[in-house]
Length: 161
Image (cartoon, rainbow, N blue to C red; front, top):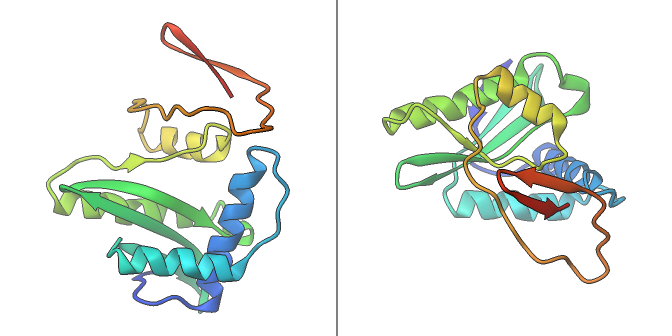
């Protein structure tokens, strides 16, 4: 496996981004199909904004990627995705380690991670890497017609989800 910095989008990377979006939608029970063109546009936006992007390449194939955002020396993982056939092979760890190296280059010892509350695999992955501090909560109004089926307690408050 090789970790490379991404400087331009190719079809394989666009497809991985499209698959990541399908997976994210599945956490809210929204069925969808991969849209490689939207994946290409999303990745191009990251690159134009100068977000550091790294990809894992295995035997010449793109296996996964991580998108980082740097704000005032603080590194945020915007997205980390590994293709299904490459999971549980250490690729996510290698990509996340690259984000941690980036944070260390800014003098920080942590990476901030955006995680969907239903992404149980990512939450377990981060816990294994020592990430256990809840940093912030995103709160919004329900979308028109959205059905919220869960309640999530956080401290003294309960939120619809």
